Image (cartoon, rainbow, N blue to C red; front, top):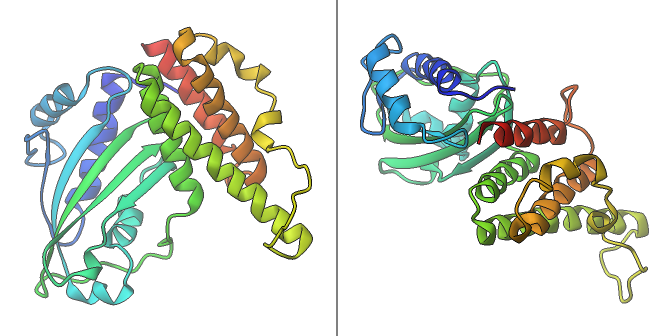
Length: 270
């Protein structure tokens, strides 16, 4: 895994190619810079320069697009239909969708926040205008709702970024959100085991994250200053525990392995 200003530029171009090919596409801007096309290298370079602060930086896209009103019938966010159309070679490590334009008759905004398995991070603000003069978006067999694990790993990447930028308060808050998600999985597994979600007394179970072995990854959180080391260890435990409780991703490589590769990459680049 390698994250540089150049890899940010190359991946940004790929996203721009996808945006410009969308039916109903109007314009896109990054930091107030609007490339005339994906080949507008000077504008794209300027946008990447404005976005790049360090290896933890992301790219903020603002995409203005007209959508045929027939899509409202699906009731799901428009972004769920758009994502397969802009899917990149590298899949998603983490993903979050905020807003739902299909719930309003007016123009609306949806925000997609994502991290690719390559480590590239982006926030995409879709400014959506309903327009029956544009063609409907093509059907896509790969359209699917984001799953719980998408949100988990997106928060994990957020927590990692805050940790490495020494914001230990927010990093610890996010790490505990992830630990709680693992506890929910463990409680649901207990409900299945006993055939009920009513438990007058517990069974002395040990929360899985407390007994998760982190020794193999100690070299990562031991590089964090003492004030943030416990938070780093909790983040490590949360990631390992969640992956173990939920099973491996459908790809050949588990998400926690990609996450820890990203952690190592960040440390080398800072």
